[in-house]
Length: 196
Length: 196
Image 1 (cartoon, rainbow over the protein chains, first blue to last red):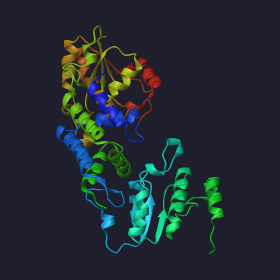
Image 2 (image 1 turned 90 degrees about the horizontal axis):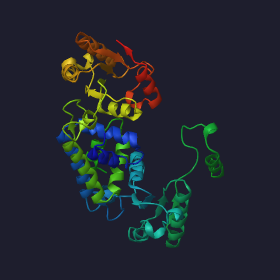
Image 3 (image 1 turned 120 degrees about the horizontal axis):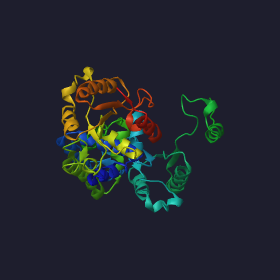
Image 4 (image 1 turned 90 degrees about the vertical axis):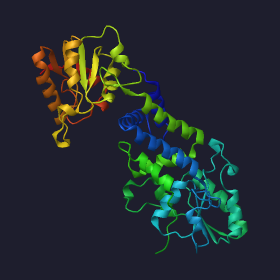
């Protein structure tokens, strides 16, 4: 029951994040039940997106223009929010509370994966802070070892410029139960407590 | 933050079974991090599979030949296993205990969806039973209402031909999907099939 073109399609689907053999199979079989036109539309939308979308010249987020919509916004606050990936921008934009601009690192410093500061988009951040007269840089990398290390590196790099560098708060998440919060988070929440 | 080509790609991904907006977004963003060549390979494999794969002239399973590998097998047992979908063939083939051939219905009788016996691949089953001197037809549709109704319909249709019609045993739990049944249960269900 070997169908080469089907196996190849299943293999392609299984490259997607979090997709195993079984799910890939399901996707592939589903696609075969669609009309040829629908499959072509899907395939075209892939190539189309890949060809049209590139990195914003300023913040390195995805855009189909030269400068992304966020960077092109007028009256932005002189604040840059540094994130690991483009989807993190999406998450913060959803909150509708931040009116500065972003800076996408496209990775974090990770010695285990041989990723140093020069392998991620850090250098242009320095230029931006100077050129755009930035007053604060919020480092919003993930609260894991690599994210913390990257935040520390950026802080040390930017401090000499006299810019304020902050880190998004870490603590127990809203709506969660203290009882089920892990020890590391709880410890962090206790140590970074603030007066009310 | 509207990127039209990205939205279109996310929309295409969200058409896949079990994929919501969030997962579709994840897949789309992942694709954008791949090289243009990789994305093109993915897109090509879709169109390629869709164009090359069609239904086997005999059993209506997916194949890239005129007659599928199972139907082309020599010394098959004179038994036909009737299933709802191509992926069900895959599930039964994995057990490696069935050496007859298959018949894919591409659906089941479902009055709620206006699907009658003429909307699924039942008619050619009659011809096959006569022409291939079939001794037994095992109905392996899912153990849900529609699957049971379809099994009864097939049994009534074939009985006059003097062929034995059996149903895979209800060792598989009601309401579950054949595709996700483990091999042991499926094997048990096959061997303890009962005449209907």
